[in-house]
Length: 147
Image (cartoon, rainbow, N blue to C red):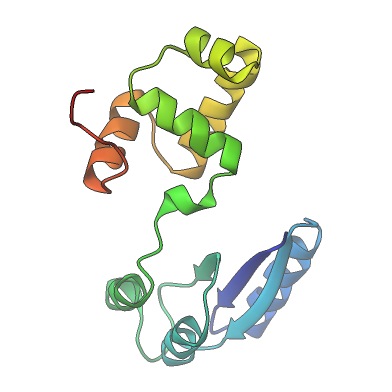
């Protein structure tokens, strides 16, 4: 499964360089390019993107305004970038299950569970279990009722 990337920058040489760099990663595909903020916004609205990589100082709409518009149109959550197994580990972590118990429950080594936790934090741009829990609550991914 490939990850579709939209590259938005007003400098063709930058777009070309990013396209070449990303081409070296087999699961990333630059599926669209935009030379200004208006074109970027139009492309964002035209399809679902996994990643939008954009310059903040382009002609047309730019900066924080553009980010707010993109986020309003495509409020896709970070947790959607997790693999099924990572999401399963994420769910156990935010329920308060210890890494040792997660490993036993999922028939994994503690080292594998720890690696999944590190990957989850990195993909979601979070730094702690507390932030994972807060994210789960804010996005209604955790049932807080007692069983």
